[in-house]
Length: 435
Ligand code: NDP
Ligand code: HSE
Image 1 (cartoon, helix red, strand yellow):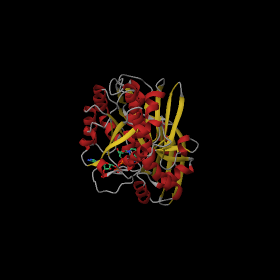
Image 2 (image 1 turned 120 degrees about the horizontal axis):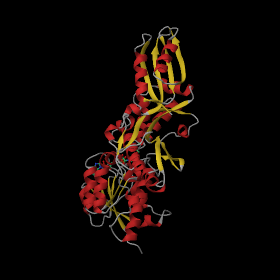
Image 3 (image 1 turned 135 degrees about the vertical axis):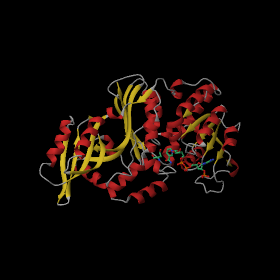
Image 4 (image 1 turned 90 degrees about the vertical axis):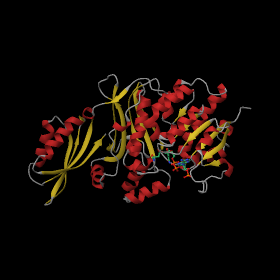
């Protein structure tokens, strides 16, 4: 019989609890799950009630005791946040233990340091749960799609905000109440500002870009806008024009290549045509579209947060490591596809060069010629308009909504500056992306 593989858990919250629950109930799962043995578990508060029944002797408030336990072969970091998570991951690597983590914040910022330390120590750091919750997307990008030249990765990669946007659109539910529900369901980050301000999605798209394009990007430079500034009126107007609004994350190659490879990354509320596959992705579900040559377009869809789905991804990574350990009888040389180190430099392109469609809403006077003047400012800067519509005309003024064809951010900024200088335009009230 194969030797048991010892698992040490750092954290027993939403995700850690889900992992412990799978390890305690191996029946009808892959036989290797039965070979995983939960050795020790680090928590912050020993007296907190737990959703899983664990022998109290397994619990400790000292994460180092878990990492250094000789019976622990794989360390699972599901504490979250930057520190002590980063140091604990590095400590586990230094102790010759492979690591599984769901921590996108640490990987997006310290992924290179961690990957290099793991390569030097001959161990793995696997991160399937860090993006898309239960959706397998990390391993497909590392392995199954390795024969492709990836051009674009885009999608809905934050469950909390998609859950909020869906319930607000479908039920007219209040933002604060739905956010509270998302927290109670275990979807939100410890500080939910990370979700609603787009930071969690930016962490995730930085990780996906690194895997898709082969090199890490500067996480701090990813243009990021969340849903906290999104106004209901824009969701209404978008619906009337045939679009839904989603918090979209995008990573794509620029048209012109270079060294380092120039990439465009962004996170922003974006209009999605109702007949687009991403428009039907609702609730806590996520979806990631990968576009490559020669595969074309593939979409990965499923629950993007929550205990069960995320634990499913964590356990998949533990199984990968356990399988390799059992085949090779201990740590040694790592499989380059599974370890997935960087293989070329990448850099974020100048934001002025990013091309996309735009949705803008202006507050204007309801006067003859306004639409013509706004249209003229766009035309003079070579910004082609797909639609221009006036809403809510009254004595108090009107609102003009414009959807453009694909233009560079630079052209768009110049046109917006000119339009805001028109005497009949009182302000730019909203500016969103558009697919
Ligand atoms: P929780 O807040 O539910 O759990 C965190 C756990 O870590 C708790 O058990 C807490 O202990 C423990 N902990 C915190 N600090 C320490 C410390 N210094 N030493 C020991 N234990 C500590 O977080 P989640 O499970 O929701 O998230 C964990 C990670 O997974 C995060 O990186 C998150 O981004 C990621 N993730 C979460 C998903 C989700 O749906 N929730 C989905 C995908 C990824 P105690 O219980 O005693 O307070
Ligand atoms: N807070 C995250 C989300 C958890 O809502 O998507 C999953 O990474």
